Length: 342
Image (cartoon, rainbow, N blue to C red; front, side, top):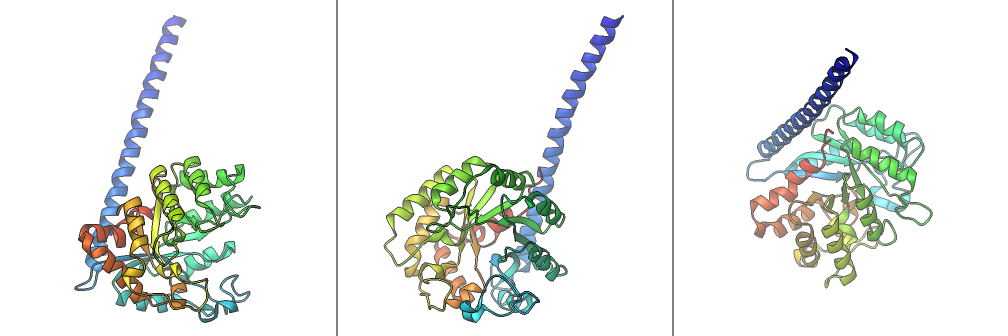
């Protein structure tokens, strides 16, 4: 009798395990379907929201701050001159709407944890500001708690990370890896700057390999510097990264940085010829599916206008046709900056 019962229990356990697997697979499939439907709805909204005669733009890189708040802000400082002032949504909304931007994402410039909540509260009732890339110290003892707290807001899609350690770079310490894997488990994203000694490209490659299911984007043309011809070392590094890191995207943003010596007033060129050779490297390396537009407003105001930078991008993308242009200028943003349910 006991043998019969044991066999029955084993049979039930096997059946339950199989059913659980089917349920999990079905659940994952259902999540994928729901995510796809939501993405398509956002794309259709963007297309409808574009002004007559303009194709839609989704902004992925703007900053807000209020230097007059009690305690001020860690950056910018008075040394940054024209951008050391209150920079708030009404100002950006006006310039963005005039140039065909239909949705925008904010990137937190401050490393103060509570400033993340300040931004979320600032635009809480403004659906134009569709997503937010926060700023948390990767590897900090409070990281998991802070991320869980902010993740309750669906607009919080990821973080910006400098990943600096004693050597000013990505250390991939156990604490950092735990933070990065937490991001990946939540279906979130990581923005990083890779320029010179700040997160050098070999460390970016190590990061992509260590956390292959984390969606990562390098900001601001991957540290490209003009004028042409292209620096062969930079080109080699960019092509290597694009080849070996399928989870890596490139932000097609802050063009004026190529010529500016820093966050100081400096007029950068506004003709496509000054940028095209570097753009060609990024387009051929990453392809139209992994380039994502962003402005870096208001910082770009130190070097040129919002309108002129968009004009450079549109002129460059025009020969590729509407399909490629729309991927780079709005569809890829909606695909990349969304919470992928696990």
